[in-house]
Image (cartoon, rainbow, N blue to C red; front, side):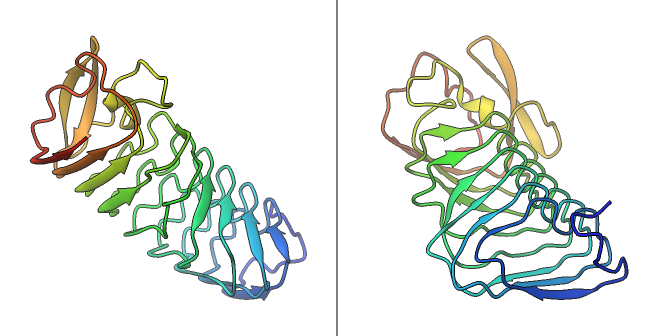
Length: 219
């Protein structure tokens, strides 16, 4: 069922004003919806599963935001969504954009403090992600990001004190990728990844070894 049972199942476009947080499960599973406009004067958060499974949603607009959080599964499997509002993302929680295969770019992640597990899993059209200041960067957050050519991360692993390999961000998704052995484990890195920037921490052991696609590395 949908988060709001009063919404017609054939609805294609909707405008609403929910100052602050978009409710959890608002349009969950509403496959007919193609356009969503949030007219709130200050959107701060998109709730869990708010648009999960809205497979025909191609346009999502926010009127105004100083920066907003995207909760767990908020846009999962929104396979027609191509872009997001320009306002910065401050947190992207677990599976927030999982399966958004048409999403080609993200708003600024410059000040994002948290990138959850599988946050961008399967976002196969995104070409660049820059997250220089996060305190957590989740497991398999970038798995299946086949088109990723440029990446900036604050450290290797999931936290600054992590002893994990670079590959934990990509996991074991094998499509359009190549295998690397790092810290006795095998991960799969997008074959298009050529530019990599790592800041803020030392690189431990062979945690970044065998990145054969990377031609431009800044540490």
